[in-house]
Length: 193
Image (tube, rainbow, N blue to C red):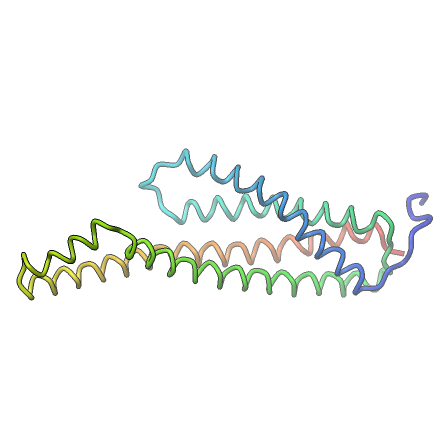
């Protein structure tokens, strides 16, 4: 066990902190790679395909990427450190908590962005604004009310589709991320004393 020599046994807090730091650092690098691959794949899919298919592709791709992010983080963290065997379980628990928190924050940000994006798209459409401005001169109140009802219905349907996509995506990502963390236990145990 030559690779175990000249290494310090670190605390749960130190190991957890370094693993999370590595996850964030490698996450940025692999995030760029993920974005490129995801865009290349989804750009080849016709527009009329379901957003759920794109969510499934994102989940699978992110599952693979997050696996490698954790592996790189583990390799970096344990270059100069070891961990006690009894502490591995605590580190895994901490990483699971971190994963749930990150997935929750990401989900909240994504849902807020959907609302904001839909509203900004509607409010920034110049043709729509002009049409609605002149509508009062060209149509009676009943037709305007019908238009507004149809517009709100269409906005609601669009948001529902986007929320369905996000729900499938976020639940899938949570399951995949939480599934990947326990797989890292075996890699961490290589550095246990």
